[in-house]
Image 1: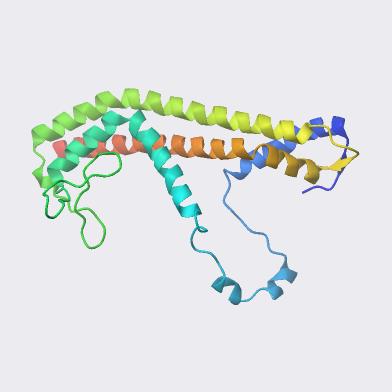
Image 2: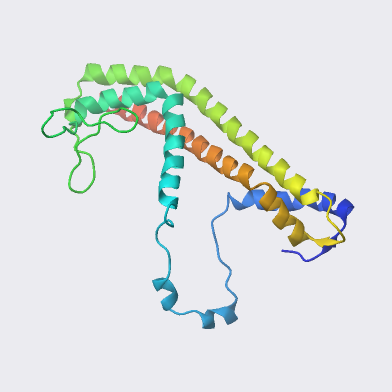
Length: 231
């Protein structure tokens, strides 16, 4: 980070460049640049202290956020999940609660399905008849138009959230400060000022990515059904 000193006028000119650089961070792979001299200070003992899990209390919080994102996708694309579960009902076996005979469901009310020891689902697609394949293919084909439009709306929300984060970052970066300050000083204050908006932008970006992947998955499923009918 630059140590160039800035007054308030110069800060406005620098804001867009710095914010643009920070905005690109989320789209780039995480890399660590270690000075060659510092490598002599490291040893394998550092790996023994490496965290491989969330801190106490963080795991539940992260799980809650992930479930909120999944909930948005389920509410936005209920018909897509309905199609998938109707198909799975034909090729999979539900998990039955011992003693009650009830079908076990997930947090969204969909059945849970029996898995193999490997963790993969126990499936038999030979159970699907040609007529059932044709019906599923028709429902997927007609549903794609609406799903693609919904995914575009979710993407727009993500872009708007990113815009709000950049605005908040700019506000924190350019706000008057006493004396001359460095780019690093203002960037740090901008990050703190926009922290809440940044996490919201990350959340909305994750939801948008999930929506996009769901539509792609339905497209691939439709293509596989089509291929199996013409084979």
